[in-house]
Length: 207
Image (cartoon, rainbow, N blue to C red; front, side):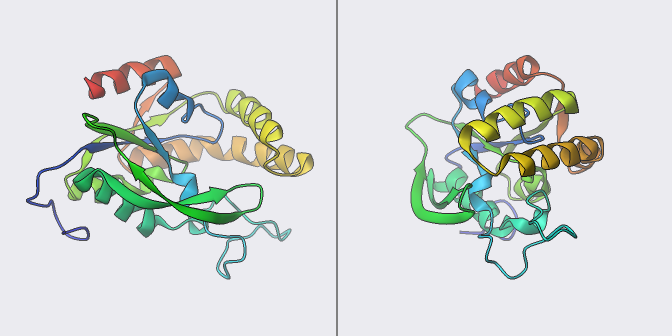
């Protein structure tokens, strides 16, 4: 199997749709809305005990820095799924900041596309295209304030971090989003400006 090099001569089982966007922008809900299976790349975060974790001057881990996740592992898993229909992927627990298990992520019979979503997903677009497994690449471009509100509601409800950390992180992320959107587009993602628009594009790709 030729993961690191160019497209494989083997027939593909499926292709992957990369979906980038800010935390809280609705990436995960699109899977339920469209019926297209989604693999969250958040499961490829590093444990908080990793010695090379990026940190803010305050000492808090910067979970929005690409150095906080295993990009190579994510890439290899996506290619494996596209070529064989399944792969072993980690199960990450966000409140405890660590991997808790390894599971088999497998496509159902007849599934020809699936979503890979995450804030770092755009980093894989070029390599997935070179590997011949990319169906499309999108990024959600909604209002930063809207994303901040929905992100806060989600994170408080799931108990992801302490409330003061979530509020502080929300403000930081909102100020970074315009630059992130430009970066995602530079990486090869095309913007969609609402979940309705994103759902329409995903439905077209699936059919």
